[in-house]
Length: 448
Image (cartoon, rainbow, N blue to C red; front, side):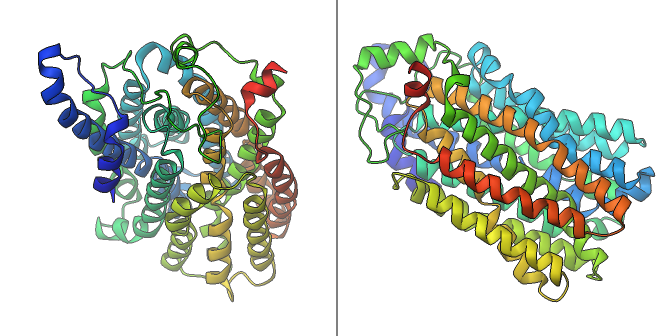
């Protein structure tokens, strides 16, 4: 699939090297194809690394709590660290990308992920574990924000398919980590430290494809005249002269993004779906274990929830880019979430596979949100600013959720109140998702 996609898109990607005029005609097509394929590999490997740090911990949360002496409230704080780091570090990603180039920042992010995953199991303290987790999550945060930027810049006429590929790889990494962490830990001698540290190897592999792009701070993108605008669902180019588009991309004047109602709706939607996702990744396996489901099966159920994102994360962005309004998809995903939480409340063990399936469908709000980020702005500069604003603000909104779930769980002695909270949050999520799905761009709203 990647080879076909790369060959189709090689005509839109510019060479990563500066060539003399004599070499231009003979070597540029081959170099473009090579660069495109390598970039696609880098995007896929990056996506695979963006969730194992979280879902592997969710699968072993009970063992980590026992090993480090954590209370339920502290464990809730641990599950709130990801959105906190994504909010704090994600907002710096656009500025870092302007200074060093997005590829260099993503490469540094992969280094941070690998280092943090290797160190954190062996810190032997809760504070050290949190600090090393923060290093890993810093790398994830900047990569989260810059993936839509890279897709918009190098693949402007393939936003749906490339976002789908990236989201599918992200879901695959999430599901695999959830499914194999427990059995892999047992195969490594039963040490939870080894079971968590092994995922650093995937981060090391993801560094390699980005190295040739690190020095391309001023590399031209594929945003050429005639390229399809992701903000136009019917595929029409933005009605803007080529020179003005180039100037907008290079000079990158800052939008007054806070004046856009769509940007705020997208930020709140991002925050509420992130709340549900991180509660699921951090606590769902524990919900099933408390209901009498064996630990290995609980890990598989979490994997089922995550693996639903593999096919749907590829289908939903492609479908979303073909619709003038993404509201119907928002509603369908929200209804699946309501049904899944109702099942967890009424019969968590009896219908566990069905609830895991429904919540997995609901969690595909994440690739939909990423797709809408690419569709609600005309240029890669606008996408960078919208992505940074929506993700950083959204993750700030999501911080209290996992922590509050841990507190409610500890003080109520059960899961009724936490599940009730998550069910209630789905209603405003659907409302703001419908508002964010309207066919408009943040540039128009910010200038109005």
